Each structure stands twice: as structure tokens, then as C-alpha cells.
Image (tube, rainbow, N blue to C red; front, side, top):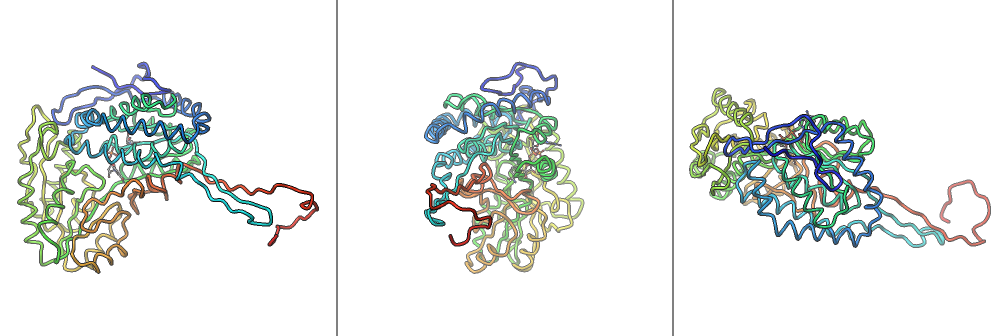
Length: 496
Ligand code: NAD
């Protein structure tokens, strides 16, 4: 059986790590390969490669760096079906959805191709008499990028195009559940002409992550994953003196006001609730129906949910399996708990008959009605195809529910009332807001990130916040001396 190795200094490593983990195809339940789990020593090798490559890459001209980015973009665009097949085989999401995630990541590469404009500083002539001031942004140094299983291509691409374009080197630590996408992208960088050591990949678990968090040569950490780990990463890496952006979990609410078009709202709820089997940090998991529309809306959602085809992502299904058997069982446990707590089970995903061969980790879409905020299906991030409808009497009650939630990643309101939408945009305590858009993922030239327990740190991903995260500001004050500047004066100059 093939073992997925690390990519260090422009080449795959020879087998050295004794610990291995199985990688499965979630649609068949079969173990398809194994992945090496890096020891601290292996991670140190990767950081050493990134550290050694940094001075040369930092001083490589912007024109050259951008040429390499353009080439990477062209190769990615031409060959994305290959990458999509890898994602479907290890994550389970349907092929179209895998292609979609690559396209969203590619947008960040395209954004980073504009880095010369984004790195331009300011210039002030004659700030004081014959004194000029200008500002620069310079790369920070080797960056660690630690990513979750649910977007093995897109999430690393939220960070590395900007980091590399800005002159940093990177060590990517992908999820051990679907490690191959990162290696595929590493080889693509090499083909695009990126010097060895600028882009490195180490596979692994806590041992690899902890080594990166504490390594003195790692200067920044970009993490995406569950809230408890995001919090841990933020605490450890900031204590070690690094700049950190740690994106965590989510519980995204979609409010439907009584004046909304209920057919459009039902389509949106199904797409955003069950797309990628609910394994998206921007999935809608709580639908807040403002009465009197709940009966009609639930009926429309149920009707659509029952038409979804569940199966192997290579066979044209709408929804694939969950990532592991353990995760499937955990999600099924929530369904059981919701039913036991008294929520109405409108559609039960446990009865699913998937179009697949073998023992895949399938669970059909599940719709709950009359969910209350004390139930675990509401309080917890389930990260599966489970949509909970909560009935409320007013907009104010819906807003209070969202603002009381500890997460603040994404949210949406469905309405035809511009005034209500404008109020919502202003009042809701969530980082990414959709108005009649259920999954409001910002374009690459804006920044992606939530509030509250959905993000630790103060920099969101990509966009100008990403550029700032991967660069440090410097301000230079210049005076070309002539004899009139002589003389002693120990005070701060004033209005000179
Ligand atoms: P996870 O937290 O289990 O793993 C994320 C990364 O952390 C992986 O690389 C993993 O190897 C590593 N890791 C796991 N346990 C660790 C530990 N104890 N110490 C150090 N490192 C550890 O998350 P996941 O299950 O891979 O991904 C799903 C989660 O990610 C969900 O909570 C989802 O909401 C979240 N997510 C958030 C966003 C966002 O933008 N906010 C985007 C995607 C996913």
C-alpha cells in the first residue's frame, strides 16, 4: 500500500517516520493509502528548509515572484479535474463541489498575482523641511499553515498564495484525513518554477502541530479547524511570540422573515444545509423561521430534502458520505439525541440507501422542526447534514438568538424588506453576512473570517488583512544632509 510522504525542500522525503495513519475512501469505506505522521525531527527538517530558502525568496524580484504565481494559476486552472478527483477520493464530497472548492482557492491565487500593487507603500515629500517619509511592507518569515479536513485544497489556498507572493516561505500541515491534495499542489509549485524550500508540506497530527507552534524559526501561524484546537493553537503560538490567525468552528443561522420568497428560501436552506454533507464551516445548520411562515417553509424544505440523491461523489450524487465512520456515528448520535429531546424529526437521514459500493460512511439529510436552544442539536457544531428549524415570533427574537450564540462565522437573512436587511447587517454580531445569500463567502479581495469563537486573533484570511498578516510595516524617514543641518538639539524636532 502506498504511503504519502512529506514534501521538503522540493522533493518527497524517504520513509523515516515510524508512525502511520490510514487514509480511507469515505464512499467505499476502504483504506486506500497510508500517511506518514511527522516526528518533531521531520518537522524541524521542513522548517530548516523554509528558513534556508527565505533570504533568497524574500529578495527575489516582485516581477519574478508574480511570474511564478501566474504560472501556478495557469497549471492549476488547466489541471483542476485531477485535483478534484483526489479530493473526492479522500474527502468524499461530490466532484462538482470539489471543483468548486478549487475554483474558490484559485481566486486567492489570482488575487495574490496583484501583490505588487498590494505591497506599495506611501510616500510623503517634505514632511519636515527637506525630510521625506515613506513606508514599506516586508515579509515576516517562514509561515506555518495548519488546515482542516473539509477543504483540503481551498483552505491552504486561503493563505499560501498571499504568503508566498509577499516573499515568505511556508510549511503546510494538512489534515491527516485527506493529505494528498497538498502534495499535488507542492508538485505543481515546482513545475511553476518556485525555488525548492519555499513551499513545504509535513503530514501529521498533534506532534507535528505542536512542533510548529513552538519552533523559534516559524514566524506566523495560520490555523483553520475546530474551536477547541483553534483556541489552543492561538494560546500556544502567541505565547511563543508568533503572530497567529486561528479560525474555529461555527453554527450558522439563516433567518427567514415572513415577507421572503419561501421557495427561494427553501432552495437556499437545502443547498446551504446539506451541500458537502454539511461539512462546511459556512453551512447553515440553524434555520430561524419568523412566524407565521414556519409550517409552509418546513413543508417546502422537506419536499426538496427528500429528492436529494446520496451516494458516491463520482456517480453524480447530490451529497456524498461523511469523512469517517466515527464522524458519521457521532452525527447519527446527535440525531438520536435531538429526537429524544423532543424535536420533530421531519426527514430522518438514518434511513438512507446510498448509491455506492461497499461500506461507505453515509448518512442522509436530516431535517428537525421545533428545535429549542437548549437541545444539543442546537448548541453544538454537528458538522453533518442536519438542519434544525427554530420557530420564533419576531425579528428581534431571531436576532437575539444569533447574537447570544458563542459562534459568529456566517449568517444570512432572507427577506424582501430592505430596511430589515439593513438593520440586520448593522446589528448582527457575525463576521460574514448574507442578504438573500445563504453562504456569504467573501471574494478573495475581501477577507474571510468570523467573530467570537469562530476566530482567535485579529486578522482574517486573504484580502488586505491577509497581506497585512504576512507582512510587517516599516517607515523610513530620509534627509539628505547639507551644512545647514549642523548643530546640536537634544529635543524632539517641532514644526521644523
Ligand atoms: P480539527 O480541529 O480536528 O483539525 C484541524 C487541524 O488541527 C488538523 O490539521 C489536525 O491534524 C490538527 N489537530 C487536530 N487535533 C489536534 C490537537 N489536539 N493538537 C494540535 N493539532 C490538532 O478540525 P477538522 O475536524 O479537521 O475540521 C473541521 C472543523 O474545522 C470544524 O469545526 C469546522 O467548523 C472548522 N472549519 C472552520 C473554518 C473557518 O473558516 N472558520 C473553515 C473550515 C473548517
